[in-house]
Length: 356
Ligand code: IPM
Ligand code: MN
Figure 1: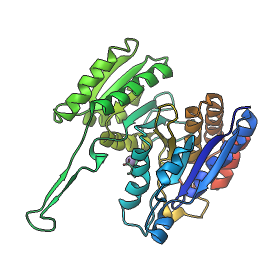
Figure 2: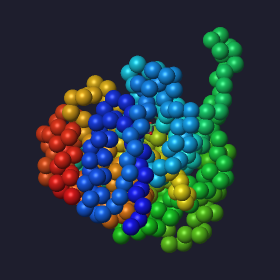
Figure 3: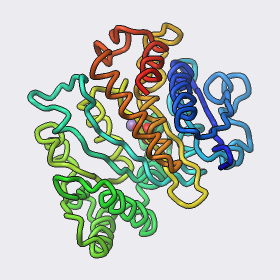
Figure 4: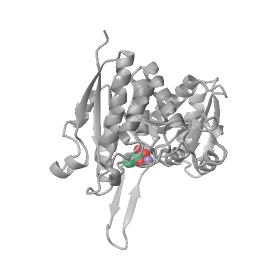
């Protein structure tokens, strides 16, 4: 029998632990049905730990995480910790430390879920964003001169490497091929080549070079500002989008809202290399005001579990969870908004387990 897959669960802050618990519930239920073995380890890392010890994760935290086959993260963000600290110390340090160079964000409108886009339905909203996850403005390079004076200077650099954009672009081409969209396999590069004529020239040339290896994939290019218009006007244009870290951050929130909002949207921070450890998260944040109220929507966390199963090489279990989610959103839940679901957080988790 195959050995157990090791999963680290970081509940994190606010409602993070509550939604992660529902994800774990569904993971355990599908594991039983599909005869997969998981060994779960809970890690109490996050804002509370930071307030007590001054560190969000232990000193050897990144090395501890390396031993896992995958990580499920609830949420990061504590009302008593200044913004930016936990984001960098937990989320970004893990992404960088484990070289999770892909941020994968499926944008799929589930049945029964409301979209703010008029006249658009599940057949129109079904694409996936491949966001580069280790470079660009997120690298932390830059600094201040004369800080706090009228002559203050601040620099914040975007760094792009050929290796960094090439591995991301190649992943996106492979994914487009694998998705095999019946409407046609199409990969759209989103950047700003008309202004960022250095960094995004590197992206553009790399995209063209890699495209030659994938003649079966149709390619397209959008400037990021135009892409924001098209996502709203014609989301059905898209199959797979590949983009830089900062632009990807922005367009995936825009995309998240057209798929029903943060109660639904999930993402994967992926290290696709053999032995790489990936981390999956609902996109909703820690929503402190809902902590402990049973109002928060766990669908996003369960969606993250489906993505995790796929990455762990369990596509059948992943599809089973996805189908169960769609049954619950399509036939049971009143809304995807916190407090308006018609069920509590844990009842939604139970419904998905029943639907499995
Ligand atoms: C996301 C988040 C993070 C990001 C923040 C919390 C650092 O917005 O995962 O999209 O900007 O990547
Ligand atoms: Mn974001």
